[in-house]
Length: 435
Image (cartoon, rainbow, N blue to C red; front, side, top):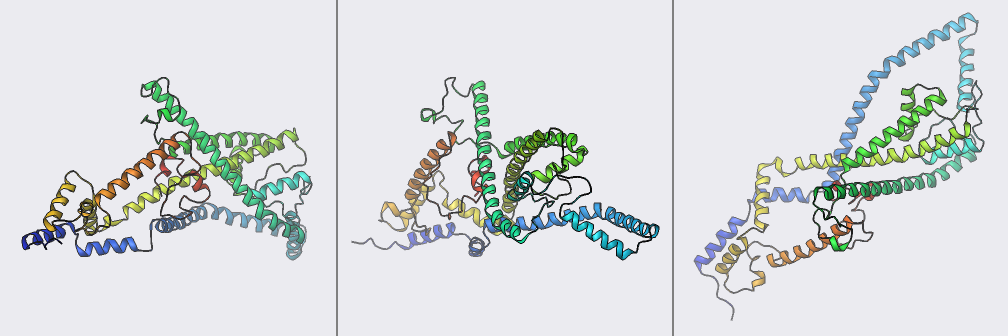
């Protein structure tokens, strides 16, 4: 026989208990609207980054305009004075002189110089050109002049740039793995010296219970520091070579290294353009190796710095969440306390449910009044399973990163990131819980 309906005292107690567990109506609606809004965390991060980039561009334009605009105006004034003096001294009209200068500019664009330069389109020159194309440096001192060359450049650059970006990403993966291996070895040695690890410690499942190394990953700040030191040392060495061989001053050489290694490639300074050098073969090999290593290192450093910027954006977004509204913050705190597993909470809910309805299944005793879709027993069981999977994953990543992880998530196929972000996902301490 079905259980009789609860008496008036029990019903009143049940209604009071349900009322205490329910947050204010307005606060719930506000928080629900915030959660259901289309502006989720990823979109908010994207829009915040776009706003910061726009502000950064505006600030940079203001600074460079203030620094370079007076010099440009002074140079233009000197050039006009020189042009008029030359026209007056040699009795040449200004239109004829300007036509001659336009011809000279066309010759400069074609690669013709007054001093003897090495050929632009022999095999070494063409190899230098395609290297600047696929690496997206693009100095601009050599460009195809024929229609067939321009069409071939479009097709060639499409696949060449894609393949080079893949090479940079694979280099990033190797350098991050190498740094993680070295830093983990140093960390193990430090723990062994401090007595926190046994002397006969070896990697493997037998010591997977050692709590000091479970889930350990290198910090992104340490990796950024190491890559920054290596990039500075590489740039200083390359600048010393360019100062000795090309005759530039050291500041110009450092400027050229940054512009080239970061693939900006203005083209105002270009190495290996003279016809003859001392030890020419050795210099060309050194120039190629410095550019290759510099581009790979700066690319890796840029991607690590982007992780730091993403951490800053996440911190800013956390400051903009429901804490801006005291009502929402209070209601969210009450909601979190309502679903939290605290000592005595399960017993209190069992007593309230027993007073309200007398004989229901024990599996549903903790969810009748709160409107939850799962019981506390189911939640505890699923939490134990998730904790076991997480511990297994951390144990695997502590001894090497597994290639196939079969964990169902609610995210799409791009949830782990795309490109360099996907490579660094779960490889650094700061990228383990960033998404």
